[in-house]
Image (tube, rainbow, N blue to C red):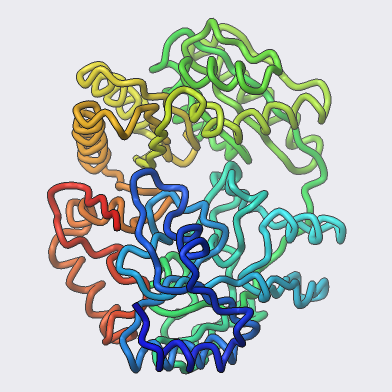
Length: 470
């Protein structure tokens, strides 16, 4: 519980209507989209501006009250679950687009802006912001930056960090800093902008972001390549890149995913094949046409049984929407859905898919595999029931083996979902003790009292996933 002294000081800053410690409100913000993680905060606070955030952090730092910055709660690694209580910081008042600068090709926004709302505003100007996480209809830019979110277009255009060029952030002691700016070049000191992107709210609170924009591509085409052999589909991914073609989107869906997505979306997806690749290219019309034809040739050489090119933008949109709906579709199968995030070099996609299937069979689980195959980022997704403790133990062992295999193949335990609390026990597998120690040194320099999203990234138990409930 917060002391009455701390409570009154916080209310003085944000007013009573922006401070809530009722049981109902605390319960609402006790979890995010990650299954089996829930913990009650002591209060929920909605700052109105950067100065409010600064004053809140000064008080929390003085009294060592944990702070958890939160967007829309779409986090999939328990990164916004208040596992050690404290204050959940909401940005419903800090949700404005401050400027679209067409001369410098930038947009400046507050952290509470919904990603898709921002994208629509940008596209009205004929400009393009490529990062497109599947949660973009409800996720916020602040959340995207904290997690370094990816998306379907990551292969060609990169991820969130590649478009964040300037930040305003509040440090745990209340200091307000600005990093970067509307610059094509800037090597003045350490790259603090990059340090904050993907830091999962463990170093400070982002209160404003300047993002790079690019011109809207002239045209695009979308195709499906169908396979009866999973390995052939995976090999096609590597072969397309090896032929010096970088598609905008290169997505993989196995048969289990196809069946649940088609049942959910009803758009005529093939369900009698073992896998499909959803491929899209954009750019000048002549380049798009040339690349799509080359990609089709590669897929045929790798034994694709059919190549289907979307005839209209409506068809293409339906395919993209169906892919984005994969998690929602799988979630209909069982009470608990665990969406994971293992990434390997593109050349190892076939081996990783094979390993996931073998592990699924070994532990007798229902796992649908889909993901951004073009950048090696697969999402094995398990439909299970948290109430079945014996099955959950098998799920736990299966994902541990999947992470282990990803690292063995030169990959990592997460490509875009973050570490949070869910994957913290596995981080040492990837970074080793020395890497963890280096990160802890940075964390301590910024946040010596460990108030910023404590209990995340750095595991207390390096052998098993920690599920915390209060």
